[in-house]
Length: 172
Image 1 (cartoon, rainbow, N blue to C red):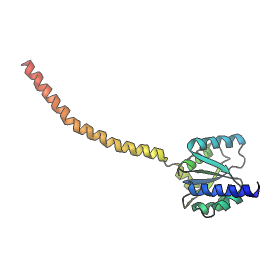
Image 2: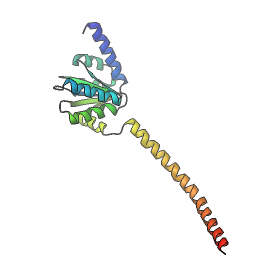
Image 3: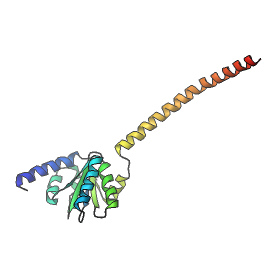
Image 4: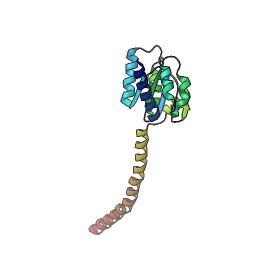
């Protein structure tokens, strides 16, 4: 890489660190190209991105960002997974690491919070933003249907009573 390319890459990576909801750092030593391509495609499908960057350039890019505390994680063969949704990147990385022992989670960052591997794993167990929205919408709709049922119940009971009296009168 030439010096100008390095500067451009560091600037781009700095913007990524500033804009990301969460960043996960992991080792990928021993992973095959096919495994890495599979990992990248799963991350892309979920709405995140995986990058392999030189540790020195990643440390430079971290300067002045909220995630600056994770610069000590960049040793050895590291990759960076990030997404705007704070749950997406940790979830995909942890799920992929369960099936592939070559991917080892080192830690990460969510805003100014530095996460250890257990923190990344616990963040991965949380529901995603879309799942939370669906649950919230379901909780909002449930009381409305219950209210409609309660309001409609007395009217239907009255209709049954009138129907019973009408049948009784017809029979008499």
